[in-house]
Length: 185
Image 1: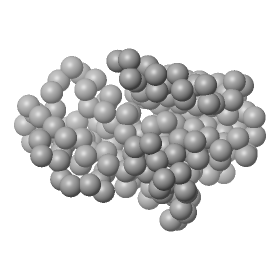
Image 2 (image 1 turned 90 degrees about the vertical axis):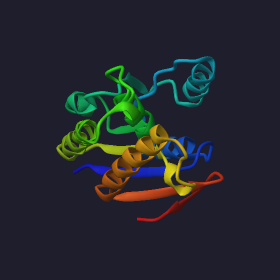
Image 3 (image 1 turned 180 degrees about the vertical axis):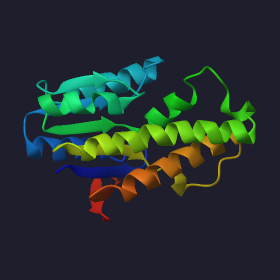
Image 4 (image 1 turned 60 degrees about the horizontal axis):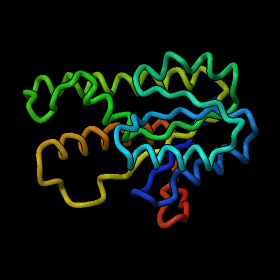
C-alpha cells in the first residue's frame, strides 16, 4: 500500500531538504521527479544546487505533464519517489499551450483548471495503485496578501486548489517553517 507525504512551506523554507531527508531515511531506491523548466540563469543555478544536494544514486525523471503515465514503471525501479514541486508543475501546465491565462474567459479558465486538476487526480490514483512512499513538495503561496494582478490571482487560486486536493489525499502533511518541519496531519 502506498504512503503519500505532502511537504509545504514558503520559498527557501527548507522544504526540499526536509523532503529529501524523508526519502533518504527510507531507502536507496529513490526516484526524483523534477517538474521545473530551467528557463533562466537563476533557475538553472537552483536546479544545479538541488542536483548537487541529492544523492547521486537517485534516478531523475524530468517531466511536468502526464506524470501519472510513468508511475507504474517508476514503481518497478524505485521504492520511494519525491516530486519537486507541485507549484512549478501547475505553472508549467498553465502556460503549456503558449497562452496567457489572464486573457482567458471564465469558461476557458474552468477548462484549464479542470485539465490541471485531472493531471493530479490521475497521479494520485496511479500512486495509490502502487506500494510507493511518495513525497510531494509544494510552495504554500496562499499565506500572503491577495495578489494585485489577475495572472497572479489565477495562479494562486489554481495552485491553492491543487495543494488542498493533494494534501487531503495524503497520509502525512508537513509545513516547513525556517527549516523546521511541523507535522500537521
